Image (cartoon, rainbow, N blue to C red; front, side, top):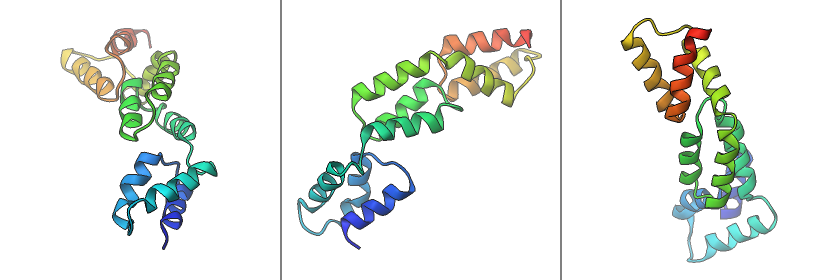
Length: 144
């Protein structure tokens, strides 16, 4: 299978950044420059679109994860810093509501003691929510 064919097969499953495709297809490159040429062609035809990758990741992961964790995933995909910063900024505006929803689905009731509180805090922090948001969610758990 050609490099273009392999790339199109990967792109048919989900959006990939150019960096991801380079990493995945590098072992199949037979002559130097062949992979770059194939990816340039696909990018010119808009099969590879960095903005779509950002939107896809944000849409699929933001329901369960905080802005910090989504930023890490976007950086791992080798996306432009400006696009990542813009996406993270948009996510910050809804971070409290999303954290409350994640907390409600997982725990649903206020912590009964310090150990339960620590468990809830660790859970939300590991999901990438900002510490100040986590404090508000866990402290406000008594309101539920």
